[in-house]
Length: 345
Ligand SMILES: *Cc1c(COP(=O)(O)O)cnc(C)c1O
Ligand code: SF4
Image (cartoon, rainbow, N blue to C red; front, side):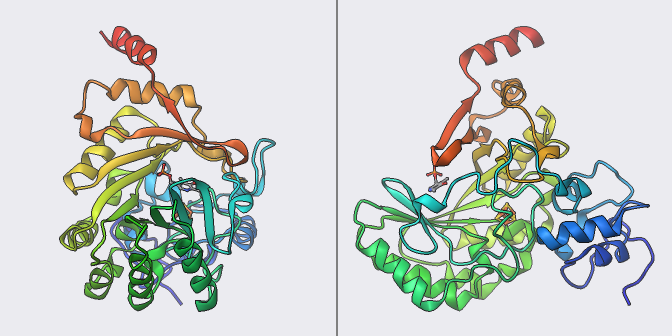
């Protein structure tokens, strides 16, 4: 039996919490939480809160920005009219299993659909999960063969799920095979592991990602608090391995929807050698309405930062167009920034 005493901030459970009862036993759920409803949520959308992330949650704070990202909410059972199962419309752009080719010069490879944590706002929430979508060796070979015979593609982007959930041996093999393809000029990995489960970035993983070709690693983080001392060690290991670090964040109600939270996030990224790359407008995945921030508000928030923070901290604010139309820039535009400057003097 887990210790029934309420967790304090800084309390790390021994292992990843994967159901409502474990979250309750760790003291992470608010008093009076409806365990039956949360179990129904868990049956539909996977739950995982790593020890590192559980330790960051202050159960006494109802507006905790880490809790908001990972703790299930009964509201997830309701799908809003505008929400869709596959908001990025990957399926029509899949030439072979695991590959998504939407833009001429780059394509995604999703070697697995498991993640260290399951974000409640995930745009792939209908497919990600602990036992979802591990490509077989045969399927990976077919995907590698597709890259090899598609010379207009210069960049392979490993995503998922989270590619750093692969064993270091498997990841090393995959990066090596892709690296051998002459027209693949650069490789990219999209991951949440260095903040969500920093202990995974060990010597074996560092060795696996030490490759000859330029490797860009795009870190998904949404709040400054995610950059713990352990995350700092993980990120330092990655830069030491020659990896270029970029940051991607999702604009989320209750997590980072104000200029100060975003300024802190972007400045914290830069201090960890992570260049903010994209700020994403939330994709309309089912049961995520509580995180929605209207684009006009997002533009106003970013406008407030325009002249205040170093240009290095500035990401491009993008939104996935419907039906696989690709990412469009949301703004702010000159008029937004001028209005904000006038409004704030
Ligand atoms: C987002 C995305 C990419 C990467 O786009 P960049 O703008 O280069 O970061 C590539 N392929 C697909 C299908 C995507 O959704
Ligand atoms: S880490 Fe990415 S893919 Fe995994 S649950 Fe979070 S948003 Fe989804």
